[in-house]
Image (cartoon, rainbow over all chains, first blue to last red; front, side):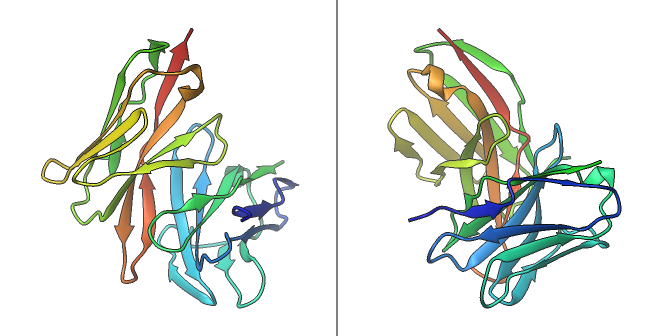
Length: 111
Length: 113
């Protein structure tokens, strides 16, 4: 049973470009969560999705960030017009019930 | 005040030592409790869920005190491979059965030979 998969593992973008991060949950898991870890900080919740629905986006920045989990395919976290402050590790987690399992993360570097 | 507070350490202990980590949380609506470990800022790995009755998994014992909003983790007979950052994590349930996780800053453990 494959774990949570994320790609790309590393992403470099110039300021003003768009970043698309993908997450495939574990088989049988219908809940997907995105977290961000800034350098030297702890993990912070961003958004919680189920298929075709955003359940809780209380941790998402108001602008430039969006997330989706379509009926088919992976969940996507999209960051438009990236800035240096977006440089971080972005982790996706999935769950069937309460326990969340994390993917290897995407390390975004904005130059 | 942070929602989940941990002593950041570092805790430097010799192999074979017993070490205890503590954590407090502020949201009385918290529904689920966990310890994760994180190695070198890789993905957090679930160590164990924590229940009011306490639970044990080999050398690891976790306790939850809901009245005091306090969570603990005890590691017995420390191994070199236990060196990592231990994250105290609280789950806040929304309208559905599951919800977001709130992470503590982590406690760093370094086990020395």
